[in-house]
Image (cartoon, rainbow, N blue to C red; front, top):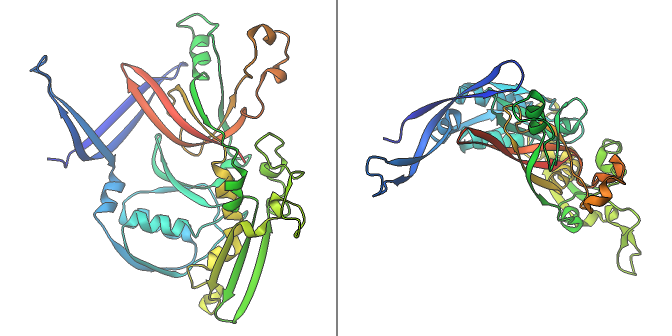
Length: 373
């Protein structure tokens, strides 16, 4: 009928002492394909698309209400009151917002409020689901990149397996093995600059005080971003401050000095409401420049890797990868470990999305990972 639910139970051997098991529940959205072959008249196949129950419910509901204060607290309230789903908050939201959610689905309202939520460094917050918990996760990009987000494991590009099949060592060697890898290393600094990755200008008009302020952002000089890896990283993907551009009339500048590459104009209203901004642009005024820098650099370098499956490999997790240089095999023995590694590709990454696949008893995971910045 198209209104079925699916209870899915998956079990895997974790290679140590016991099996791991997850239980998931989905609501069927559609049956897009049906197949019956003349060679097998007693067999029929269906393709089924099923989604989480809170996503299904969200499409059937509309909400409209006023919100006040912490945007993440209001996101939690939407999940609990309107979607019957609990959340796990792993970050601190410092922004505040008073306003009205216009008529829209609960998940669209969550995304609208999320866009007004920032941590202390101006990093945007994200909401996402993971395989091992029925709670929706809420975490800032800055916290994902911080030291308190411990690395799950370090994956390696291994051409050969050294240990005998069936041994615990064989299992662990395969558990860290990258089976396939495709990368987007566009090195498009111009695109990042246009999106505000290195510098930007924010023009703010306060309709209450009739004032106009123009703020120029340079991520190399920003006090909250000075010590981030993005500023310290010396890989080929990092900014080269010695490379200059510009017209002769304006003189040469490095790319982080072009504040006009990305311009935002905001109208704010600072009146009343116990000091809370009562316009949708209020929380953006102090955070939009840093947020644009985070967004622009977030997917500047990404890889799609295939590894053997792990229930703990989820969005938001930090992992490491080790990728060898493409050198003649005869030269490997002459090189030290640090010389063998391709340092521009190796390092820590954040898992953005994961597709878990189970085919003929083989469990693999295809993950998009983004360069830690």
